[in-house]
Length: 196
Length: 196
DNA sequence: GTCTATAGCGAGATAGAC
DNA sequence: GTCTATCTCGCTATAGAC
Image (cartoon, rainbow over all chains, first blue to last red; front, top):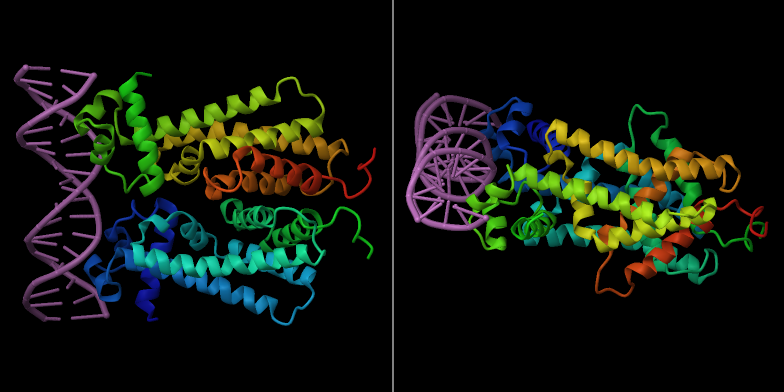
């Protein structure tokens, strides 16, 4: 992607995050990119095209990041730990983009929406499969796997909503806390496997 | 509040939920309310006034609901259980309004925003205080109380994002699952107090 | 590849009759 | 309290020069 397009995208991310997609005008994106609004249309077909670019590339980068972090880890407990760490870390590092992903899907036309949701569901399924597998094999506490996976994923995703880059805790510290919360609390069999 | 105003409010809730606040036109609200858009301005000063009404009354009703559910319960464990149950149940019952509350605050002017946030922070503080109190008194597992309270609140709030009124589980069933997840997993001291 | 200029539309809100 | 009619503005997007 060329430099100008990157600048436009960055400006759009900041504005969509701060003012929401529909409340953001192309003229504002242009202003923050130091170009004229007509020039944006050389790089993007439409305002929605910018949104879709942001959503889709963020989702793909998240997927790629998790896959890298899980590579080579066999043990289900460790896989789950790595997955939570990666998810939370990404949601701290890419706060704005993931918050847009969570709230601006209604700005997409049907076909773009479908394409994004396929990508997102595939990502979430990785988590759900790990959790179901861990429960089935007796490594994690039994329970409603679907609900537990929702609880875990939404809790970890919501970090993007309260994390402060200059706050008391770093993204890595929060990732560690969540890793523990998820694996040794939410998923841990109450006593049986503590020493096993 | 008179009948027409209620109809307008209901229509706005459905549209803000489905299409977002900024993407919703006054003409659409009017159409769904079976009146002319000019007539809305007899009941509300502006579009933002409708949004503020929705946000503020929902927040106050949530606060009132929790207070009713907690009344007379002394034991911290049981208070926490009741609070989680109430919070999750409300987020199932009032799904649309709470989702608007989570994503459309950027539609408020500074003073309205301030008023809402005061109300919301007061609500969240009830939870945080219970958690801190429980940890300090040794009833709940020690840990970063602030982060744990974020984890719990965001997880419970996010139920509004995936709950399906006609789905497999009722609001009451989900409330029960979350009550257990929070109190016997996230907050429970790993072994010490199980039989105490 | 970026510009100026503008088309074309729909938005929020108001005026004033009934 | 609801209506019709309309004001005014700012939006997305396009046309066409350079």
